[in-house]
Length: 512
Picture (cartoon, rainbow, N blue to C red):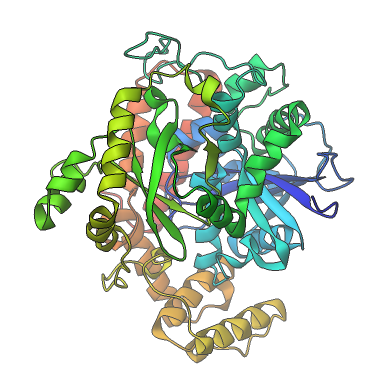
């Protein structure tokens, strides 16, 4: 391992659950070396000011204990923060400078950015923040020998393969808090929640869902695993690199292997036993040996497509699994962990039968499944908000990238002579206008102010415009939450949010 590699442990707290269009409230990070020794003065604690084109979720605020008003008070130095091991002075920015500082942190050479459940949540917020602010959403993940990793998946792998390393508390139902058991074996199901693991493993985590506290707990969890079995840790960690994933899967392409992912669910111990049947430059098409193969052999054309992607349920069959080489998959040899696999409720006879069927029919299976899974989807022509087209709007052209560079340079140099109308495409003009309006509203012309007022008013009141969470949704949710038994601090948070929402209603003349 390169001694110069550093880990950037990070965590977001957010005002919304959906990374597309949702807004971040706080970012915290701590940098360590490969030995997980914290680098001096590396801790960062950023808060993000909110703009008037988004509605915070009350449920999210009750979890994070943050409101737009509280962030303003932090900015003005009149709001105390939770105690932390690190005496870090918080920094408060508008969204443009907020993501600019984060991008700088993540882009330092030989940085591995990681968190807890960061692939599905934090990384997606980072990508959307970067895209929405006309910055490359992916470059920090691979350039300068950089990478990303997720300690949550490391914990899943530890439970499946090396359970003696950590204490795993029993999971509870989110609705009624009852203990959860496996439906077939009646054995306790494990909890992978960071706060539960912290308690079970004697890690201080007194302010769960404070970004700084979550970062500290994540470091300690990874430290326990890495110190207990560095060979095991390095096996998992090495698969954050595409080349290593390709090498591993090519080496094991003629035999079953273990794939660990939350995709399989707790009832399947977050694990599948797969067999690879095809691949392309970025993905591997595999079949799950625990699911029937015969329908894949028997069905053809539209019948096969309807079977795999049933329109009435929108639940894809788990017979077929796609492993992407850029998503840090957790892979392991069946033979190496044969003893551990005996502990799980696996139907070995069924798996052996499916394996034989696959091997006997691998060519026709590959021929009929590849067109369904290895296809390029057309760019979106929907009239959705340009901020939300990170995966459907296409990459920026060279001309657009030159225009973006000039735009950022003008902001950095405070160049008031730069005009948004000089941007290279209609998409850039609209996105640049929204950046200026959210972060530097005093630079708008009177015409641009009118456009921004109408856009923001529509976005927070009309789901068809781009926001899936409207001002009416928020008002109704606050009313329902007030009907529940609440603590004093929770009532204060909801009261603040209600005042915030009412102020937006007055501003946009949405009062009835």
